[in-house]
Image 1 (cartoon, helix red, strand yellow):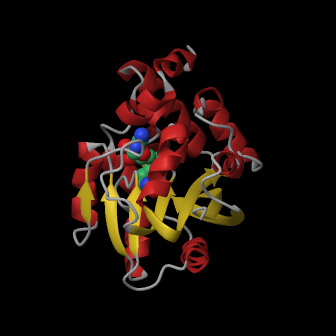
Image 2: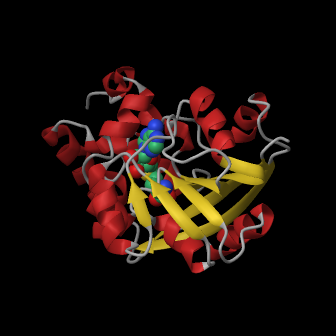
Length: 258
Ligand SMILES: C[S@@+](CC[C@H](N)C(=O)[O-])C[C@H]1O[C@@H](n2cnc3c(N)ncnc32)[C@H](O)[C@@H]1O
């Protein structure tokens, strides 16, 4: 099997964009939302209350947006991919989703109580995205970054990582301390990090789709993608029904510096 290595030199930022131009429906079906406990902690730490203005940056299909909307936040979603925005409009019809990027946020200065980023900060250029997040936050506002990471200490997940070639294609080391990236900007702080384990239960189709929804898989040539997904399906069939996928949610919250 050839390596996915050649994909990555096209640029992490580039892959973060083209890898989500297709497959939005698969993403919506197969990727987990965030554990309620983690979202409740995010809401409590950042002081989000009913009516708070929250910008969901890189909102995708709205998985995090809808959870914050349910807490009463008045959300604005920014998402560069038109196909992601299309699914977003179906799944979260009460929230406006607009085109834009983290490096050039389409919002006025000091207008947001919180900026949240689900499963996406690793795609950004932090040297441009963090000043932009700080710009749109009001004094006392908060930044929150959250990821659902597959728990690679679980032997089945470690094997899935190998079969799906995530070990060659991951855009960042799983479990990375993004707090240091935030700290280095001197624009936020101090950073508070919390982790929440949870288990997603999937049928075989969704198990294969959660691999298919990865950006590096989306951009593989057809035959290579099919080959990889066939191997993932064969492995998934050995894991029972439903398949239990352990995750760890990693949450970083930091107030904007005054
Ligand atoms: C893994 S999805 C996460 C979607 C959603 N936040 C969630 O929690 O499910 C990553 C998203 O980041 C978006 N993205 C990639 N690069 C971006 C950038 N520079 N600025 C804003 N969004 C970006 C992609 O279009 C994609 O929708």
